[in-house]
Amino acid sequence: MGERGRLAGRAGIVTGASRGIGLGIARRLLDEGARLVVTATTQEAADRAAAALDAGDRVVALASDAARRADVAAAVQACRTAFGRLDLAVANAGIERPARLIDVTDADWDAVMDVDLRGPFLLTQECARVMGDGGRIVLVASTNAFAPEGGSFAYNVAKAGVVGLARAAAIELAPSGITVNAVGPGLVATDMTASVVSEASTSAWYLDRIPAGRFGRPGDVAGAVAFLVSDDAGWITGHHLVVDGGQTVGLDLPEPASEEQSVSIGGRS
Ligand SMILES: NC(=O)c1ccc[n+]([C@@H]2O[C@H](COP(=O)([O-])OP(=O)(O)OC[C@H]3O[C@@H](n4cnc5c(N)ncnc54)[C@H](OP(=O)(O)O)[C@@H]3O)[C@@H](O)[C@H]2O)c1
Image 1 (spheres, rainbow, N blue to C red):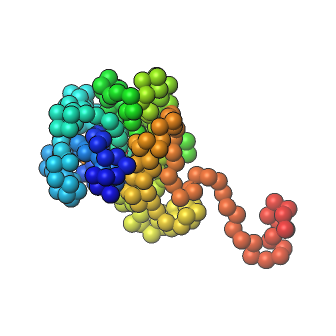
Image 2: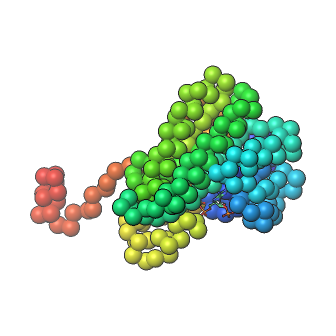
Image 3: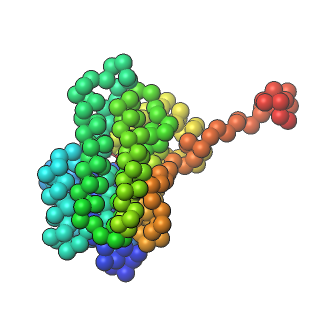
């Protein structure tokens, strides 16, 4: 598709695009014709992503701490300087510091809130101040926002905040023609989830609960983001689009093993 795609002529930012879901989002938006500033915590990581994306001068790589206002403002400025415009922004950068409520330290709570909640706030605010009619902001939340997982306390709370942020911002920015939506990935195989996916017992436990029968791929999330930043989603705002292979839809019952068992499951036969 490239320069003739759905996002031809658009320019924007994807934070945390050096690996995993962010890299997948950047690849998809470039494929659809966008020009992008891609960020990571170091210039080296951002440069590596730009090299992997192989889109020439349609990509600018920038070290930008998602939790620092000056860095976020610099990313917004870099997009406007390089491409003369800012049409879309994807707040994808995120971290996880597993701990239960009882154990979570102040340092881990602060680190997660800084990157996972303050980060999307800063990007949304900095973009909203300069974006015009047709602006598109997408925040990467999580199914943890409404289906929290024990042992990820701060992360669960931050992601619930991200959905709240998308909804509150959507109300205020709709009159300016800017949409703000969230995407909610389920379990996507990336560095963040490597310990779960690569360990046989946790991997099997999760796969049992994903009706689609596989873990997510970065491209699954990227497709949803590409839709939300496109003209096709112009009248959608404040939405949390869940991308989880059905994991949080509900429960499927196992096939009854015998006639007797089928009677005992909820009295149904
Ligand atoms: N994987 C899943 O199952 C899953 C599910 C739901 C939601 N999510 C969300 O999806 C997003 C991406 O997750 P992922 O699985 O792709 O994670 P990942 O593989 O660990 O990648 C995280 C990305 O965020 C960047 N990053 C971290 N801290 C940053 C900071 N302070 N400033 C700028 N960039 C920063 C990293 O850059 P460096 O390379 O420089 O460290 C990297 O590009 C996160 O918001 C995550 O919470 C993931």
